[in-house]
Image 1 (cartoon, helix red, strand yellow):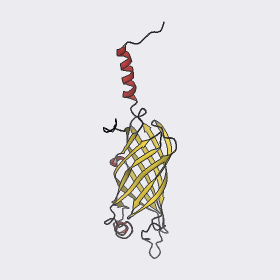
Image 2 (cartoon, helix red, strand yellow):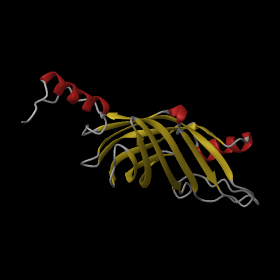
Image 3 (cartoon, rainbow, N blue to C red):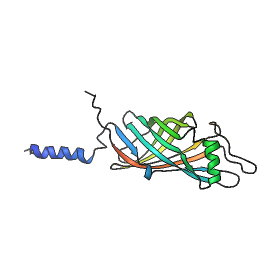
Image 4 (tube, rainbow, N blue to C red):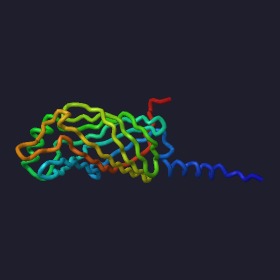
Length: 202
């Protein structure tokens, strides 16, 4: 004889399913990055030594659909915050390379992704989008490592920016010869949650 659960018990089980798995049940997800917990570092090789520095994150919010692989949103970096620990070098970097007074933000705009994304555990995907820096926008294709634990989100990505090719000034002078590309690494923390429903949808 098949036992039927009382309606109240069945309701509690259904409620608990959605309460404890809000991310995995959602068609669309929202990833929000936490600026204080996000580290953006860069390295620039040279004939004398390797220059190391950092940027600060302004904001980051991405909306993604794991099924269609649609991706939208922006990650905004404060170009004015760039520093290497050397005041003279930093002044030159801001005045002649980044020209951060004219171009105070660096923006990564997401368009889509490829790869299998899972809302629990580790995933590696490829992000396609545009990187806007120094007044110009450039297509990028970036491998991204993602780890999700409940609603906690960790993201790691690395990119190489050919800043001279992209129109920024080469800081090389005399015996100091700088590389024409700069390596950037982002280690971000944030949250992943179900996207809010559109109130205009039927």
